[in-house]
Length: 489
Image (cartoon, rainbow, N blue to C red; front, side, top):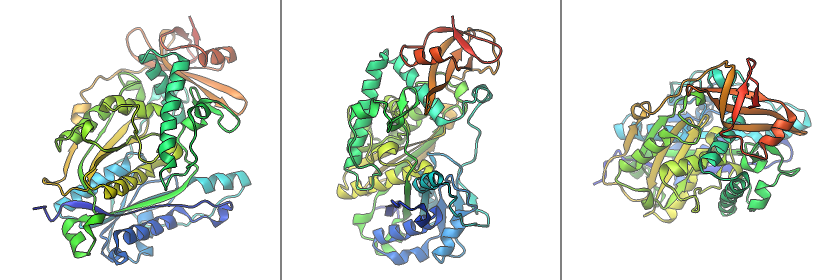
């Protein structure tokens, strides 16, 4: 017999707004309220809102203070727990993991999780030269799940390397070199990988870009698909210009029964894990693997005696192609098979830290259609840094929800020293070239010193940057001057 405190997802929602006039846009906090209401209706009992005991909001790029308090007030909730999170694409799954534990332990019986962004409206407003109004919110969170942690080290920051669009393409080029592919072979392969994601988006009713895009279009730089950072044109980047909100409602089995929620709406979280790789990219053993994904991902399945081959659905976090390839290799997934259920952050839509709420909601829909099926969600925050995993099914579990934080094991993996300033010989480990509207702006290189430590260096030499996009630079010998500028030996 199922433990009456077994956690279950009973309600989901995914909402979007597509407006030509950004002044008409709902603010993220109002979209969150609407999303929770829609999730309650999805559960089949809109009145369950009054029983919510905790409102948990995923941190966005917005500047609200305690948006959970605003959502609770608009839902006429009082004396409820108000929860926030730090930044991180891992946080939705981490919050679901913690919520499942809270429900299993009996400290909470009904929880609403929500988040929203309106990057599309912001982009339209910026283009029009207007500022969108932002409601002031007040108060403090009752609780934070997760903590803010610095994830950019001094070595990379000294060269101005602190954005995902700078670091993930360096992972990508390291993957190419490790796989012994030519630039042309590699670009063809990853464009076909991304075309597969677009194909899934075309069948996802909630996707932001439903028109299927082919591999040639994805890999070909054009006015509408300009180069962002080698080897990525725009269509290989996460699409944050979306107005999307979502909500999940979780409760115990006994609460679901008392609310009269049909079991056809129930989806069970079976297991979850969390871990992070070495916080600073400069300290990682290499730029083409993730011990945390390998250890935490496999542990999530081991906890409930499943193998990758037992999964019917999987959504691999997909901010950039490099993130997907690293996860696929670490988890033993076949890149030729579907690795997303949404279309990913490019085509499904990338509402920043809240994307995984959409992938979980979509997973719930698919499992409801086939309750015997099982699915895994992977989540990634930072620079392939923070990771969370969840396994789901519509079949009543025979054991309680299982959870593990495997950080101690991940911390034992190799750690590389970093150097901020260096003068002398290096080997280029990986690199990228950043583009502006007029062409290449800056070349960045991750470099290994003779003693095995890592440093970063830049170039703005136009001829050198052009060559970096045409021939392999990984493994080449270079010289770094005292100002952090590199040149070939």
